Length: 65
Image (cartoon, rainbow, N blue to C red; front, side, top):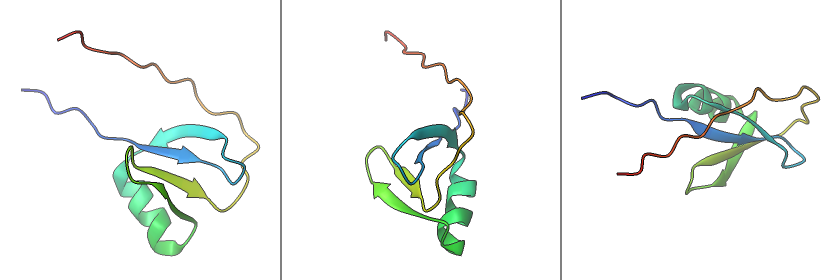
């Protein structure tokens, strides 16, 4: 049994998608007020600042079973 890590989707202030983060980082950002909840399913946070850097590429794999 393998445990798959959960990730939280992240948007910047202009709703530009960024690299997903771990739930622990999302909790810290919410606690200090640097972001707010954008959507509950899938859980997405939106940052209060605009990010100028490009996000890292993400690969989505779908299991056919």
